[in-house]
Image 1 (cartoon, one colour):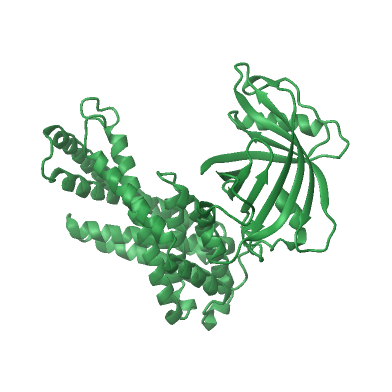
Image 2 (cartoon, rainbow, N blue to C red):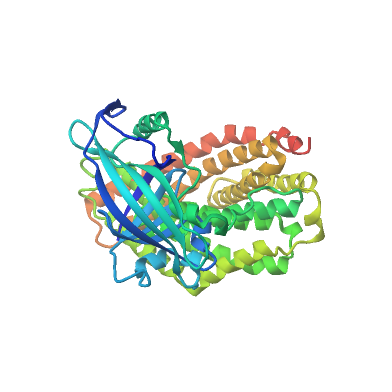
Length: 504
C-alpha cells in the first residue's frame, strides 16, 4: 500500500462552459499549464448495504484507467483534506485487498462489502508547474455518469472540476479558484462523486445538537466523541510513527469515560460500570503507545544540540524505539480483536438506548451547571489536599490526581458548552491550563523514572551514562519549572467567579 494526503477542491460547471487554466503568477511564482491529457475511468465503489462507510465520509473504490488505477480508500481528515490509501488493482471488485478491509473494520464490523455505485468518467487533466518544472497541482475536468446499483433509477450525469494540490501551497488553490469562478464555476456542495450519486440514499449525518434535556446534551457529546474515535481508528492502524492519531483516539476514549463518570447521577450505574471498564482498558492500550511516543519525542528534542553526546553516538534511544514499535504492533492486534469491536458496539448501543435515570429528563440549563460545578469542586478539593502534603512522592501522586480531576472537569465543561455557553468555555479553559501545567510536571517525573531505569541497565557505556545524567538534570529542572508556574495558574483557576457564572 501507499498513502498520501489528498488536498483538493471541487467545482460544478455547466456542461458547455469554456474553462481553461493557462499560465499565471501565483503565490508560488510563475505557473504554467502543460498540455491536456484525457483518460477514460471506470470506478466501482463498495460499501455495506447500509452505506456505513459513506455515512462516515469514507470511500472505497476500485478504479480502472488513468495513471493511478487500483484500489483507493479515502479517509476524512481536516476540511478539504483526506488520507488516501492506494493498493493494486487486483482481480475484480469482489476481491478487496485485505489491508484495506482491515482499515475499515471498525466501521464495517463483519458486514459484507458490496458494489453500490459505478462511475464512468471522461477526465481531462492539466498539470500546473512552477518555473523549475515541479508539479504544483493538477486540474481535472470531469464529465461523469454515475449509476446507483440495485436501484431502479436513471443514471446521474454532471460535469465538475477537481483541483488537487501536489507540491504547491494552499494559496495556489485560492489563485486557481479565482480563475475558475471568473469562468462561471461554483464550489460543489457535494463532498464526493459517490455522495452525489447516492443522494437521498446516503444516511443522514448524526444530530450534532445539544438537546434541551441534560440527558440529550450528554448523548450529543458522546456521539461526537464516538465519531472522533472511529475517525482516528484507521489512521492509527496506518501510523508507524507519532502523527498524533493515537493521542486523538485516546482523548476521545478518555472524554467518553470522563463524562460517564461526571454524569453518573443521570445514569444507571449497572450499565455504566462494564462499559467504563472496557473504555479504561482501551485507553490503557492506546496509552502504552502514546506514552512511548511522548518520551521518544521528548528525549530526541533534548538531545538536539548536543554534538558530542547526541543521537548518532547514543545507543539507548534505539531501546525506546524498539519498545514503541512493539507497542504499535500490539495495539494494531488489539484493534483487530473481537473485544475491541464488541466495545464499539457497546458504545453504539449505549448512545442509542441510554440507561437514564429520571433526572436526565430535566432541563439541561438547570441540571448541567450542577454537574460541571460538582466536577470542578473535586479539583479544588484535591488541590487543597495536595498542598497540605510535604514535598515528595505522596504529594506528587496527589498533584497527579488533581490533574486527572482537572481533565474530567474540562471535558465535562466542554460537553456543557453548547448549553451553558461562555461560562462553561471559560471554566474548561482554566481546567485545561491547570491540566497542562500539572501535566508538564508529571511528564518530567515520568521521564526521570525512564532515564533512571535506562541508566541502571547492565553494560551501559560511559558516554551514554553521561548523556542520561545530563537529561536527568534537564527533567528535574523541567519539573521544578512546572511547579513554579502552577501558583499563578491556580490563582486564576480558583476564582469563585468561575462557578458563580455557571448559575448566572
